[in-house]
Image (cartoon, rainbow, N blue to C red; front, side, top):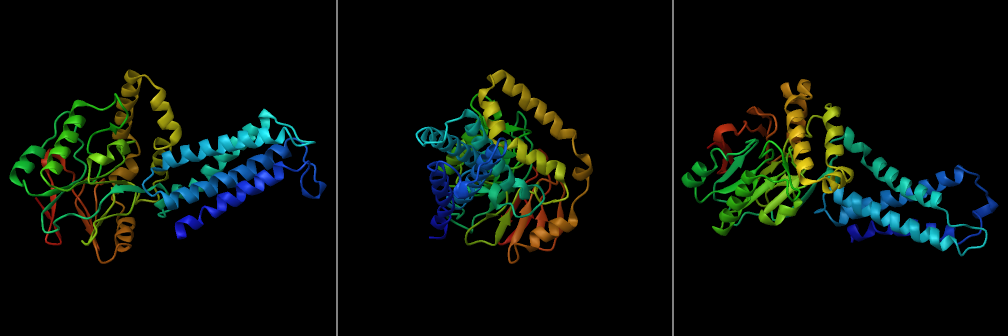
Length: 356
């Protein structure tokens, strides 16, 4: 009921737009000269886009933010075109392309305004999503935790751990590969091998989850391959006191990364990648990987101890784990897992996190 209630907001805005469009002039006989008339168009459509995004976020928590924004932008563009066509039949009104451009520009501004808090806040639910089940069939089984293996062409340590612990479940906490872009034609042999391994584990009755990190992009088309896939904050196991996130969003002072995170996971970048030839897209992906190695070193080198402790304490009563920092740190109920380089994995066993 709470989720359905949010749809009242965009519906009310849409009804108001249709009613205003049916009038030969604005209420009270107000006349808006250019460019104020375009500002009025942009403003109401910005509100429409913002309320639509809010309603979709609450009703479809399985949608990544970029897909939600693309859907909202498309709805606003179509609604704006329909509204402009309707005005052509109203005496005193005209169907103008510039008005429609103002409408869709306002839609973009509304989405931008609704995302600004993600630049500096820990209230990141709007960019977080999940699909699948967070309940393991048998919580008594070992759960192997893999954080930041940064694989390239070889899945180091994976087969050895699988052979040694064939009954274990698995949770990958992001940065599985140096860069993983889930576009057709962009995935590598090693990434396809990993997906085959996941399917084999699940066929054997094991639970496998993947929480995306800062080096995974647009992977939701593989969500069905995993028991659980998610991104952002809010990772948790049902019935077990284990919570997590990748860790890249913990340090609110790292504004440079926050901006990159929003841009690199935007609908605009997704469209650019979709329109690129495969060879060009792979070169861009390789360039991204090189840049990620060397940029923003100030924040990469220092562990954000206070911010990490605050994030962990927000999940009181659980063990809160992250990857991302490539160092083994413990603060309050939070554990930053060590870099899983060369097969250094951890395990959730008996309510504790241990080295495998």
